[in-house]
Length: 121
Length: 121
Image 1 (tube, rainbow over the protein chains, first blue to last red):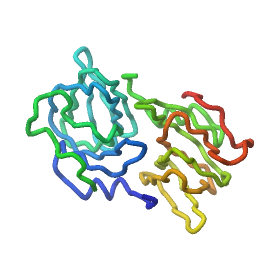
Image 2 (image 1 turned 180 degrees about the horizontal axis):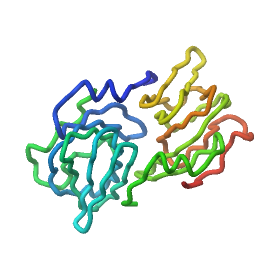
Image 3 (image 1 turned 120 degrees about the horizontal axis):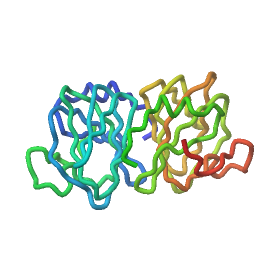
């Protein structure tokens, strides 16, 4: 892919929550775009670090012992194996960097939050 | 790293051009922040795809046969092996996502543009 990709345009192309879309792939990693609202299940990823960069809105990454609140232009890396959940009181738009094989709900039981893999935007 | 990282704050912490700073590492990849102005040497990376996401200003990725102009919130992935150079008429701020071992000038001769590896911010 050597075309310009516009984040605002890509986020405008879908509206469901907790359903990441793959906007690019490189070096075995995905750039995923996701709209979130509400609270995601607790989980971890044994073999993958995850980066969350907030594009729009307010977003939280919750750990068992603390909460990290993020605004647009702020990011966090959740190291592999660390239990966490993500949350937003109002809709937020988030860019995720992680290995292409990552399932969004990690080691949590499959649920309505478990997204199909490889949906592109 | 499980702290919030603020891109505006990180970009304010350095001022030199063409000297990427590592803002985070995950899954063998770097998140690098760079300020650019002028024209970078032609080069390619045999084993690494490179993503450029514009944070501030106007930025170009030039290929031998065309130019892709990017504005804030737009990104491009340059596939491994593809010759390119980056450029900006006025200072721009760019987030780069690429494997941690990548040298910024790739297969071009070492020059003043060749940045030290692993400088953090």
